[in-house]
Image (cartoon, rainbow over all chains, first blue to last red; front, top):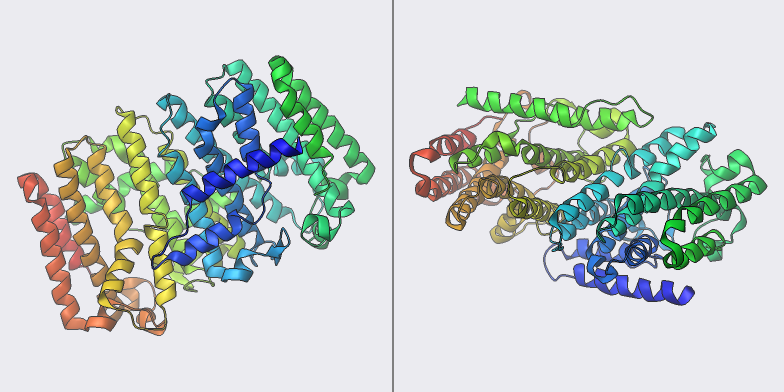
Length: 291
Length: 291
């Protein structure tokens, strides 16, 4: 498992490096800043999910690397902007200074903008066999990162800070903020592998539940992890008066919920039979992770 | 001329309103913030150029409204982020409080992100007759707003503040910061009208020169305009130690240069004969504008 994750990450890193090389021009600092955050040690989880979903659906996962890279760029841009002083005001991310600490706020804002923009540069140059599906995949990508997806979730998160919200609202928040692009990563992998609607729906159901389980585990780790493991201060959610699964349900109940949703995720994969083995194991691995 | 500009702006406003209605959901504030800046009285110059270029090339300009709206969203997002405290720190834009003054910095950053993202949501749902050209147009759009386009120009602008730059560097800066999306607006209008390569190149040459003339006029107005006309304080460029055509060449020489480049722009349109009349007149109108 760990070996495959590592290999996939190396494959993505190589492709990201090709799509976003350093440049020697008057605006070179923007490339430096984009690369700084892009190569800050991310797990490449979303690309991994996209590629493995494609493989499970019988597609050639190497064909869709451009979409996998775009997804990672969108994820990275969201982290840069989330860390800004006006947002979460975080100085550390994965044990390294955040973008605005390293490059200043102006460059950090623009590096985020540029990564979002670059994602669409890359996919609009994608030369897939099925142009209809390509455009559909771009649309799924764009919608999942927008106001009814990731950005919408970020807004609800900001608006909820400092007062307790209902469990429905918390699920809504996370289904958008972290869930939407986890779902679209998997759905795009299926779409670009010419999967049937039935299989695309099964993939979507898997990803929806995995996203929730993943977020619960994230909230748990913010309480039970160590600073060394996480690369950021422990308890920062509580300190920022964030609503989390742990703050709402307590630690024990959160662990139960995480197991419940990861079970649902794995159940959704039954239509794929043996081919679902890797994603099923990955689900267990992710909700038992320590960082 | 003024009548046509007004009619086009009304057409774009109507379409923008349909693409971005208010929403009654937990993240409704993001829609409010996006709409606040989008409907703050912009001239809709880039959509106008796109639609009129399409018409000149024999296309149906009403077909490409989605691309025109996307372009205006990208222009608007760039203004919101430019105005942020970490960037130009402007409190007023077109006579109204800027986004971060009105909504706070976090929402302003996200409103910019969301408008950029929305632009790609819209074009990925565009149903044109020629999918090949549609994808090409998305690529032109994305590249013109990225690190080798608008964002690149913004970086060079930031890096140049406080020290004098060469005229070559100033032209490079503006060819990216304001020029790139003026060019792509026109090129997309031609592309989506199935124009020949020769005509696309002529349109590009027109737009390149128009963009420079337009920027020079912008710099001139920052010195000669009134706060009432511009909706922002006069002399703000000088106050921020910005490099402008006026600071580099003086007022008289800048006026000459503006006339020179607008002449070049009009010359480039000769291949279109009578059909170029509107864009030719628009060029004169733009470099004689007072705001």
